Image 1: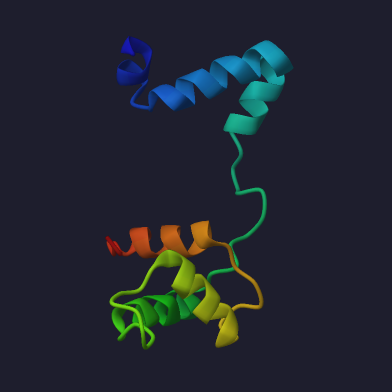
Image 2: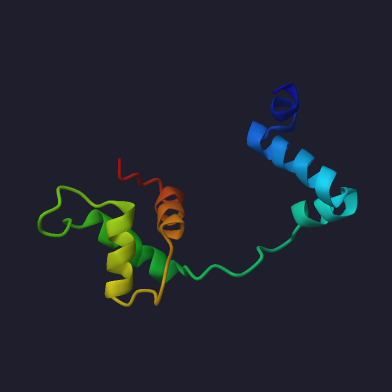
Length: 102
């Protein structure tokens, strides 16, 4: 716990870093952690992000009291905003804009 506080990271991050060090060694662990760019570019552009946020702020589908991440994910694909998208992408897009569906 003290390590995570001093490093300003979560305990899970400390655990994963130690695990990676034990299984891969120091060079591979550091190489993975020091990536300058993400493994692949984000498929969510500013325009797509705006469409997701607008959809989340709109009325939910008939029969639903509110939007859920699962409903938004389905609807984004139905509207061809993105060809395919995962729930985590929708969730992090909303979180980035300070939106929560709870």
